[in-house]
Structure formats: structure tokens, C-alpha cells
Picture (spheres, rainbow, N blue to C red):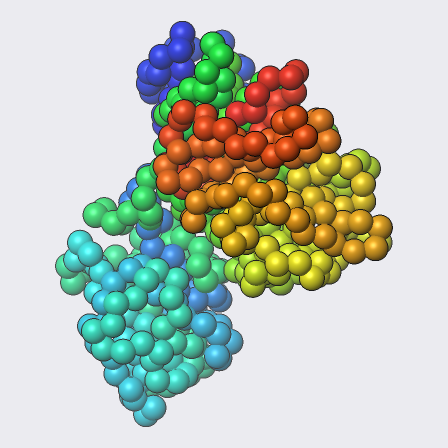
Length: 465
């Protein structure tokens, strides 16, 4: 079951295959699974996500009514693709990056109707047929994975709205490796099969930066994810727990018995933004933006679960735990800051009316609403709520363009902020009554997330670069 884990012993990294012959470690590991509400039978391996597994995504949502060759109840030897039944007008997206090499407009009742063929790297091609309208892409156009290329329809030789999807490599039809009759698929989720020669995305190594011996030091955990979407939370273990959305699943990276391990939770999650909090339970709770909706993710003794909050958003989310142990969040939607809270058994959202930058994070400093640290017009700003209104004020600290940001409460009445700017990590805090920015002397790029573990020690900063 457990393919591979990366371990740390005596401050040096090494690698061990599985847990064979290491009964004590296995006991500790399984105990940790129980604590975090992860059921071992739902795991999809303990190694980091392979680069070629699930590299392509589902082009449409619906039920698989036919596979290549038909279904056992209705064999169709000449049927060369996967039929996904769905509502007319629903989006169809490109399964992977590529170039449109065939584009046909045909509103008749023969053949594929309106369709396109996309040619991908390593000999792969995908075909998308029976579109309701002319394809939304042009011949020879370069497309990216997840880009809308048309809508589900019923043109050509078709007897109901559906997508006819063909997946080939070097001319050989390989789609049945990832599909079965009666299966329900969701647009944007991974196609569960290997794609040799393709990558789901760039591999990123998780690093931890912390103070050791009086100086900031950056150390690799040895764990890789294939996504820049991750969040870190203090679960009281002495380390940060990292949750990531990679390859269409929720992954959990944590330390067990001195060893960093990465597990697939088994929960399908294709998040564009996520933020985890600890509310005193064994598992973290997460707010994640997925397919234009704000999802609530949680774990219990039966595994991981998710549900829609009822809030639609395509923005970035940052969650906090309030004094009453409830969850609130702040969302950047189109450059405006929104507040999310719970009440009466439902989730609610309201605009603060304040502008917010791409780099921002919410932090709870007391009171009835979170504060937010963000970068606006090249400066670090603080946003908070008074009894009557929301207020934005500059700290006077200049921040480089394109910076990544993480904020946290370490006591003292003011947030602390870490920024990754031009490849370097900086810490900003209030000292002697004024905001002060300090270089840590370490490197950082891409997204960052910091956690405070208590005890008066410096935070730990996690990066995926």
C-alpha cells in the first residue's frame, strides 16, 4: 500500500521503501493516520504524486454512457470514444495543453458534428465532438489545460446532448484505461490513468525555513507536490502540517516520528485556492475554491469530506479561527475584499468595500472580524474593522512587485508578515512602535505560508519551490 516515504534522521535526509521491517515506525504511522481521521484503505499511495499520473483532466461533467467498444449491456465495436452525457450548453475544456490541429463546423446530422482535435506532446491527441455551437477555438490555436473550447451539444450523428471524447497516443485508442461504463466524471478533475511523457504540472519541493542556532535556515522536506496551491496549519505536533491540492486530490504532508510523509487523502479536490485552520479537532478544516465555488473540507473517523458553502467565488481565500472557535474567512474577489462567516447554520458573505491586492492573508488579532495584510500600490497595508466601518492603512513598508505574502499572530497586538520578494524571504513586524522590514538571509520563491507554533519561538515558513 505504501510505496515510498522520505525520512529525516539526525538532520540528514534519506529514503526508505515502504515500511517493511520497521514495525515500530509503522505503528506510529498508523496511529497518526487515526489521529488525522485518514482511513488507510482510502489511500492512493504514500509517495508524492507522480508527474505523469492524472496529467490530463476531465473535459466535461456527466455520466459515462459508452466507452470504446460500447458497454457490456450494449456492445458497439465501432464506437471509438468515451460518451459523457451532460446538459446542453455545459462547458467543454481542453484535457491538456496543446494545439488545435483540426476544427470542423458541421451542424448536420452526420459524423462528429462540430468538433476539434487537439494535438499534445509525446504523441497524444484528444477529440471533442457533437458541440452545440461552432468550436470556441481557432485552427492552429495554442490552448491550455482547462481552457474552454466549446459547449456540450447534439450535432452530428448524436441522439442526445453529450460529449464524444477520444483519447489516443500514437494513433492507439487508450481511453478505456481511465473510464468505465456508468462512471460519473467532473469537469476539471483528473483522468485516473498514467500519461507517460506528460506532466501534471511542475514538481515543487516543500521547504521549511526556521531559526536554528540563532539564524534563519532553509531545509528541504524532500516531499514534492505538483501544484502551487497549498496551505499550512499548526496542529500542535511541533511542525506545520501542509495540505495541498495536487493532481486533483487533497494531499497531506506532515511529520510522523521524525519523518516527513506525504499521503493522498483520497478526497478529490481541484482547488485554485485553499486555507486550513485548526479548530481543536483531530483533523484540520479547510476552505477551498474549486470550480467557482467555496468548499468546506473536513476530516473525521470516516475519512475526508467536502461540501459547498453556498458561496460562489473564483477568488483567493484566507481563513482564520475566531475566539468562539468559529471559522471566518476573507476573499479577494476581483480586487475587492469580502468577509465570510457562519450563522444560523449557514455560510454568509459580505463586501468590506475595501480594495485588496493579489498578495494578502487574513489574521485574527481579536474582536469580531479578522484583520488582513496585503500589498497595494507597492506598499504593505493593514485592513481592519472598527465598530462602524472597514479601514485600510499603509504601513509605509515598500514591497517588491509580484511578492508572495503570509501573515500570522505571534502576540504583541500586531500581525507579523513574511514576504517572498525577488527570490528572498523578508520578515516585517512592529518594533519600537514602528513597522520594520528585515531580511532573513534565506531564499524563497513562489507561494509561502507561515505558522506560529507558540513558546515564543520564531515562526516556521513553508514554501513550494
